[in-house]
Image (cartoon, rainbow, N blue to C red; front, side):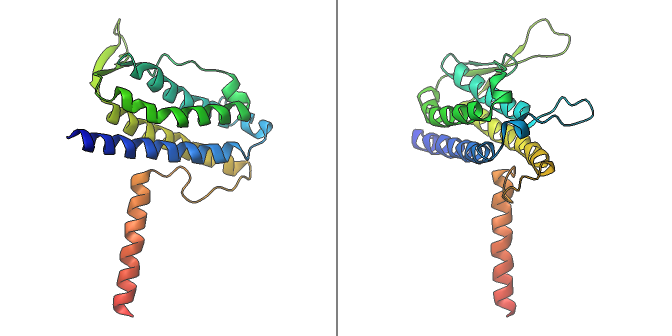
Length: 188
C-alpha cells in the first residue's frame, strides 16, 4: 500500500471511530446521572456507565500504547468517574475524538498488542497495525453501543435507527435501499 493509500485508509478508519464516538456523545448528553448509573441484569452489575467506561478504556489503551508500539487492552485504567458521571464521560469522548487524528504520527511504527492466554505465565505479543486496531475499535465500540441502545430503550430513551449499527451494515442498508428504489423505478 502506498503512503497516500495508507493515509487515506487511516483517515477513513479514524473517521468511522469519530462518528461512533459522536453518536455516543449524543446519547451521553441526553442521560441523567441516575439513568447513566442505573443497574441492569439479574446481578445488577451492568450499567450504561460501565459500558461507556469500557469503550473509553479501549481507546485510551490504543492512544497510550501507539507511541511505544505496545497496546495492552487488558491493562485498562478503569476510571470509576467515567462509570458514574456522564459529564466526565462526555469530556473524555471529546478528548479521545480530538486525539485520534494524532495516530497518523505512529502509523509506520511496528505495533504489538498484548493478549493474555489462560494458563500462560505471560501475555502473547501479537503483531498488528494501526489500521487493524482502529478497525477493531470500531467493531468493539459499535458492539457495546448496541448493548447501550437496548439498555437506553428500557429507560425510555429513544435513539436514532443507526445507533449501535456497524458502518458495514449501514453501507449495506444504503446499497439495498438504492437497489430497491431502482427496481421500483424500472417496474413503474
